[in-house]
Length: 274
Image (tube, rainbow, N blue to C red; front, side, top):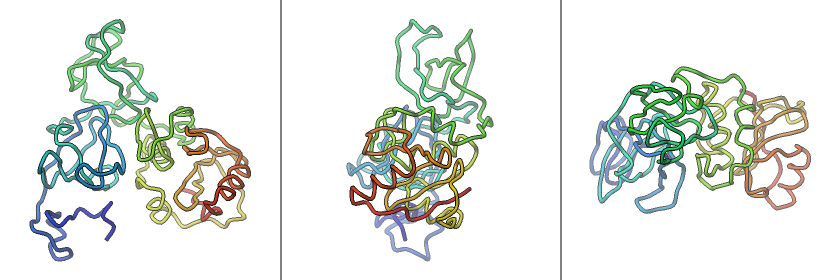
């Protein structure tokens, strides 16, 4: 079983896995939300970052021990460890951040102290509005121009991805401060109402069957390499978060294929149309 999407460790496992895995304890878990702008989802307590979770994202918490909670994200099923200080009680989300990023303000005034940065996809519980601002579950304020009701969705993943051009490349990053290839794709499709896995290999094997390699690429196709994914913009261009540019960038499809193969990462392995 893949530890990234199987809620089980030697210490604790999800109750529904009782007959499938060996663990010291089985738990139904409790539901909590991320209560900070962004937090790392770790492979082990104090271990390396696998992904990141944003404000308001819901998770099932199976155990908290020595400052870390073992969780499973409700958005994509990804499992791992987060700091217990990043978690809080469930608050029903009413809105989400639809701009690439927005600031949290101490008051309903853009001249007031800025309290943090929220990224595209962060979920909010708006408790009141005042002028051009909305008050969040954190007590701070965001510009109403940067949020939409929780059921709002865009209709073109490629357009969403293009709003993130220039975001720095960050392995395991899921925020405006840094993205990796699979996060860019996941965020773009989530913003359009389509949930997909969090890592490129999970995306490649878990989505629709691959297209014939000779097909002309179409907008919003996903193009995969070993350990990498890009989103097609047109028959000759794609967008991806990549370590070549160290940013989210647009690149010619043929140029990207040559560059990636020349750097030793192999050919295109598949292309998927959702």
